[in-house]
Image (tube, rainbow, N blue to C red):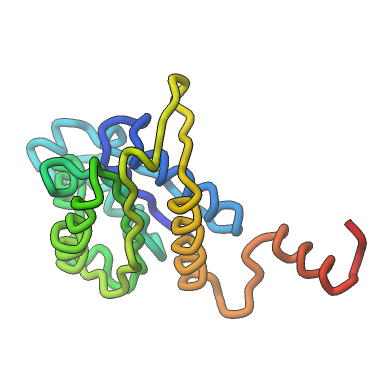
Length: 197
């Protein structure tokens, strides 16, 4: 099972990228393969001019087609998701997200921008064929702080919501009854008295 993670911020040190990396790490800990792509992974000329046939755009479409699920993160600018992310989404096939579970993640300056997920991003995801869009995770700038080294400090509330969303995504892509990751299986054995820790 594979998941594609699309970073909609031009900066790898952004808050939305930090939340995306946290979700990627959590999914990988559950035994899921995640491929991360961002604005910097597609040539600027292809993005700006919409070169659908470019090598970067073709690689993006191939990755999206092979994925079972999609993670998307974006900062909210001017009450909408980022223009860079829209440029990436414009390079995808018309029904690129058909049959895939999608988890949107966003950050913004205030709680009022939460609606950008509902009224801005989700309609575009639906236009790309997504029919199973999980409840998005939105965090304000105060809830995700970056120190001078670029390390993210995520509030417990946001961390908890991210973990719940990652669990829901994992449930959608893992076969029924599959153990998501070894730590979970070992914990179950310990609780059942299978070994001591």
